[in-house]
Every structure is written in C-alpha cells, then in structure tokens.
Image (cartoon, rainbow, N blue to C red; front, side, top):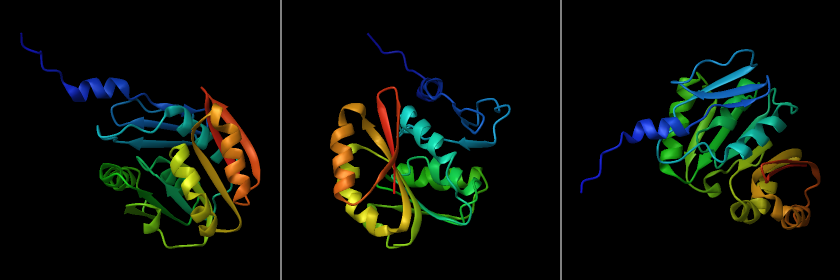
Length: 205
C-alpha cells in the first residue's frame, strides 16, 4: 500500500477561511477575493506552522477594537500570531506598535504581513513578554490562552499607562469566573465581556 501524496498547501488553503467582522474589518489571504464594503481590509499570508488563532477569538478582539480609539496611541500585540491585531491597530491610527510572539514562524510571518499591508510602524520581537521593556502602552491586545494570560497579568499591568486598556482573549466560557477573579486581583476593572462560540474576550481598564 502506498499513501497518495497530498498537496498540503492546497489542503491548508482550503482550511483557511476569510474572517469578516461586519462592515468594519475583513481578513483574507491573497488567494481570496477582495471584500466588498469593509472599512479595513487586511491581507495575510499565514504559514502552515500555525493558523490565525481561534477564529472566534480573533473575531471577538476585532469586534472590541471597532469601538476603541487607536489614534496616536502606543500599542502592544502580545502573542501576535500573524500580526493581524497590530496591523489593524496601525490602520486605525496607532502611532507605534510592538508585536511579540514566542513562535519563530509567527515572528517571521508578522514581519511579512506588515510588508504585505504596507504597515511600517510595527516593531516585531521573537520571544516572551520579557523581550518587551516599554512601560508606556495605551493599549495591549493579548489573544493567547488562559494560562499565559493569567501568568502575564502582573507584567501587563506594569506595561500599561494609567487609564490604559487591556484586551484579553483565548479562553473559554467555563473560565469566566477564574479569569474575572485573576483580573480583579491585579487591579483591573472589567468593562466588557464578549462571547462567541464558547470563547470569551474581556476588555479591562
């Protein structure tokens, strides 16, 4: 018996679906058709090494970003994956952004996606949160997972300006209580909780 070789790229491409958040934002790969009637269109060229995060969580964070002010702000995209959130923040007027991911393919892919989208004000770092020394962010976006977020809350708080905003996602509805307590323990106030397909997203101040 032999195994018929598959075109992995084709298989992978068929699994990557465009994400559309109302008429606010559309994310597609270059082999998808352009969106019609969206305010911001982002083209990414994701690598096989990882996806675009859980679509539900990416969607939730973008939905929250829609009503946030990014003009002239300094932003951190923590666990940036494909760089989508940092790129969107730039398109929404962020003055400068830092993006960091522990996975090397994510780091490389974020650099590439910044180029594809002609975004020049994002610095990309490969490593953990320790790589980020700034402590004057207006907004931090962290779409990762429960454990990493809980472990990072104290450091993230240090990196925010007073009155700064932290958006966290990547955990499920069952963790609502645990995450609420962890955030409040670090002095954050929960402003908004959104849910989609059992995934949660918090906006904290």
